[in-house]
Length: 370
Image (cartoon, rainbow, N blue to C red; front, top):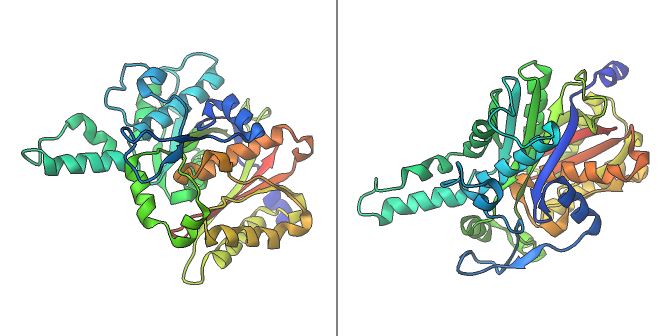
């Protein structure tokens, strides 16, 4: 039974790009990851009215300067980050400047998020209270309050006419989006899928984090970060799959109950190994999401218990770019792919990527590296 399951080939990651505090594009992320340089900057109180004094921002990210004036007048930050990441990925795929004809009928997009843009939601809600009448709001800002605004704008701008979905699962959103994209391919619903996750920095998000973080999370002093990472998935039999970076073997998820994170994550990872036929001896690297506080300690303990004897390489979420929340798992995936570029011994081995969210979502992805 194990041999039969292991013989099934999953979709292949054929490319990726990222917009992060390291900079815009894949090369900026790889360079930043290798250097480990610090990305925190002092916040201008006139622009960022949140509780923090520092954050990890995408350098020089002004939407109109990055994407141009056309179609960006009312675009909010989370949409701008997602559109920019998709733009950079399509440039690599097509070799040309992407436009409305870049996509196609069979190109799908699955984007992970937390709430969409908390800032856009709060701004519009505030207007209904402070304007002379509740309906005196700027209608051009209303689309930004919808959770799937970013994925919709990406599809419209680049002609992605396949299935379009938004997945919200906190820090696990990137792995849940990867699972959704994998299902679209294996069921024949799309010819290729762009999969990613996005998170913005804003005053609204900063205040929400300030009021909802537990004492154990505050003690770690992790700064807020932002960005978007996007992967391109193609079927195993696609022409460009042979030169792919990794096979998506399996993605499993679960929910932590009253017993806590540790048993829920243990069951999730063990189920992924059992269903895929992967053994701990095949694991080259593990990538924990490493959230602040006790959840991060529990996650590390689970992975050490399951894979400690195999002595894998540890590739955590890149700490210098801060807490990227909904985009964290997507950044873990691209960090693993970037790290594997410099490790010939990773070829044919498996990377285990886990994610733990404070609201109970847990997830695990297995990637077989090329």
